[in-house]
Each structure stands twice: as C-alpha cells, then as structure tokens.
Image (cartoon, rainbow, N blue to C red):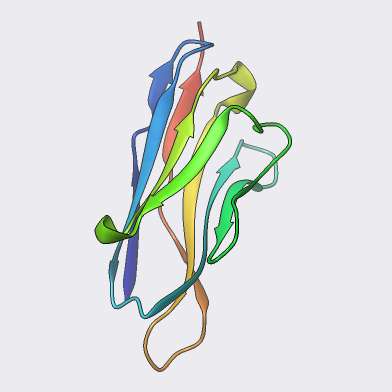
Length: 120
C-alpha cells in the first residue's frame, strides 16, 4: 500500500513564492509518472506539472516559467516550486504518483491535498 502526503501550502501575497512537497511511502516497486494537480471549487481538476520517468517535465501553459517540478529520489519526494504567484493560482494542490507495487499494475496514488491561497 502506498501513502502520499502533500505539505507546504499556505497563504502568500501576489508575487510571492511557495514550495510544495509530496512524500510517498510504502511498497513502491517502479514509478511511471509523478505530477501536481490543482482544483478550485466548482471547476475540474487540472494538471499543473508532470514528470514521466525518463522524460523532461511538462507544464500547463498558465504556469510555465513560474513553476518548477523536481524530485529527490533518495527521499521519495516530489517538489513544486511556485514563484511569481498570482491570485488565479489559489487552489487545493494535489500530488499524484503513478506507480506499481510488486506483482501489481500501475495505479494512481493521490494525496489529500494542500491549500494554496494567494491574496493581498
């Protein structure tokens, strides 16, 4: 069983920065992809940043040049560095790991989310 936990959200002023962290624990055998998503009440969840293993990161157009996804495999952690934050970035941010446990198929593993609020 895989557990995913996000942290690092909070209140920040426009133009400020935050770094979100996502730690996975449990019996991970192989990783296909890791990504960050966000959701605003009344709207569909959207992809923000994605790393497919062995490939370069990809980003939503709305965050290109401002957000950076990275990972530290020794710590089983994925980060989202968010700079030049805008009020439109306000959302609950979710981390997802697409991974296998030994003897099973690739499945999504979602965290509970962390709230990011950008407001003056």
